[in-house]
Image (cartoon, rainbow, N blue to C red):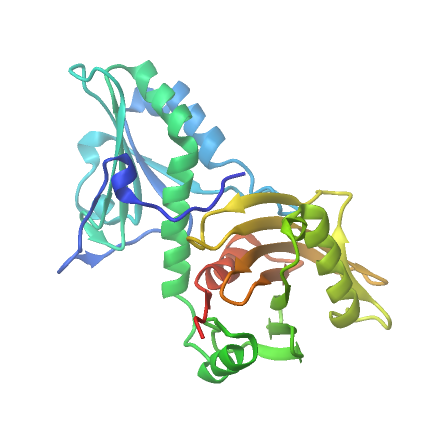
Length: 325
């Protein structure tokens, strides 16, 4: 499991183009174009790429890959292929003493991330991929979250105003979401279609000690609030965390800059009903008000793929800002 981080391009020799006058990038959500020789793609490098970038999204009840991979040989990498949003290029340079990775934004299209990995031999490319895999995933995920924010529905300004007034939090809430529940320290927003329901919860508590960021406390608080506020379709049914099939995972996150934050992912189920699905939440410290704020998104989509629906909500959470005053 990766830790979604704020990417600083200078940290690995990258560059950041402004992208003025560039064409719009193309590609499916989660798609990464791999540029390397056919021998490498059909050999150990290709196997490693698929194991790393097509690993299952760990919190989903069925297999969906972290990314989708497509391949092109270097000699054919031109024209429309250079418009792909996410590109990973491998090359061998015998003059190099050690391998390197360079990252550029908006080189041929906009928005676009181009990651170049170079080494002095084929094994060196595999070693660089293995060593840098977490950073590569972080770079690609930051771009994916940016893509999902750019493709959201128009913002519901009335909900954002109420979020600012009631919770001192700025949250880009797309049209279609409505308040299901709201009180002084908790709200549940939901958007329903005939096929799925996307939900977001915001809840706050006074900061007492660091134990509030432990997984046990995060899950305990979540379960107490969902039992009180978040109901299922059957009488007296309510949502709780599924701790048996896929236990929750918590990790530190740098996604909110200087605000200490923990990212927790897992599955939810319904007591007294048969509903369930994945969730992702961020628990962060608001030092201005000495409170703990949790941003929580969960999905019910029994007959649909869930990765992109959940990522679209996670992108909203990641763009939340706590107000200074």
